[in-house]
Length: 80
Image (cartoon, rainbow, N blue to C red; front, top):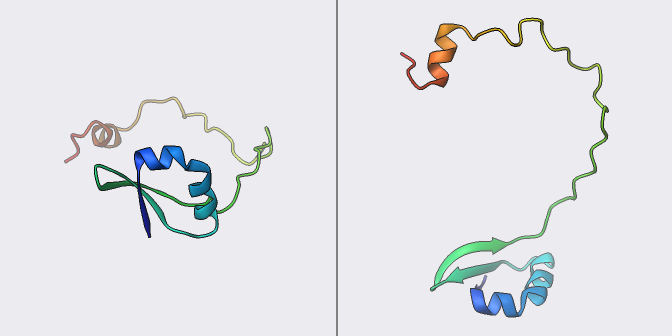
């Protein structure tokens, strides 16, 4: 595991990214204390398609009705 200080990371970011993509564990430290780790992205997210799930869910008629008292108090942090 390579531990790099912030200044060195800024100076050599492209090289560090290449090393991380190849599987090397790169840790960036501030004042000798590890703060982040560079890791490659596992898989890229695909673009979302607007309307792709149309018809899979119907909003219930009572969607905007007030919550029952027990559920409401739980959200407000006063559940018994």
